[in-house]
Length: 143
Length: 143
DNA sequence: CCACTTGTTTTGAATTACTCAAAACTACTG
DNA sequence: CAGTAGTTTTGAGTAATTCAAAACAAGTGG
Image 1 (cartoon, chains in turn yellow, orange, cyan, blue):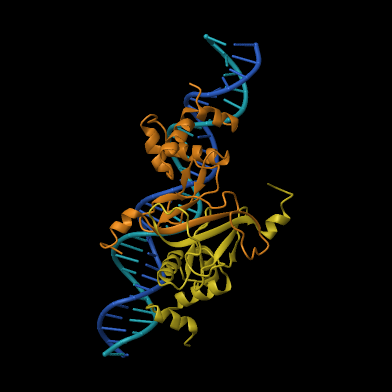
Image 2 (cartoon, rainbow over the protein chains, first blue to last red):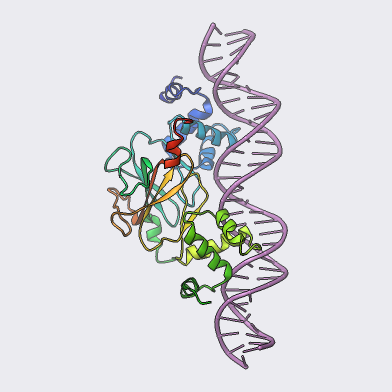
């Protein structure tokens, strides 16, 4: 079967292997997943896949621009399929949950620093930190 | 000798040990250092200090609010003494060099997201990515 | 000034997330 | 359908950090 994912992979210069398609499908259904979550998701269909292969696939897909990699402080690297806009993230400072935040500007860099120290700015990455709804609900029990 | 650093430590509820004072001094002279750089800096005076102790001290100082920890994607955790303002960072996407960027607003969160997904926002962390002056100079040789 | 107690550092081992390399394999080409 | 280049597997290795128990030192009270 020739799917959209197959052709996306091929037009990026990558072979459309079952593993890669499965990873893309997994990330379509669960955004902001780390390598281990992706492994668990695709293990249902491809039980022979190793965590190293998942890392390998995720690195290839990231390099090809088919997925985006984010690394919030304190978490393992997370991957997402939303790559065509310049959006940002809210991370729960207690449990690490992640949600998307639309960028007001829509393209990189959405902000320009006041003092660049001679750097040639390419992008601005914004990470909001706060409490997710669940952790707010449990806020009375622990701090 | 009773220094400013001593009293800063004590008023944070921490004992003013030589190791902690040395770490604070090191971070005063070299901002954005990782644990290993701090270890090298204090090894001149305290050669018996282990990397584990440095991690321990850095964690204590971070918890006490005396230093700030940043974790740019792809780098080890970096520590800095500038904690009283809400400033941001430029990271070189090639060599990982870090410089400070003043926050226009000056207090957290300097930005407010459009859609919060129910999160209670506490801070906004902005990381600019670009090429540092050195890497711009070498830009013709490699990409 | 000395001993005590608690907080701190050392020592040594373990863990996590990830990378590297060679062998086995499979998607696409002709 | 066979060949080859690109992929995945298998297995080992690394870097940064954390954990735990024993050794030690800072600040306190005598």
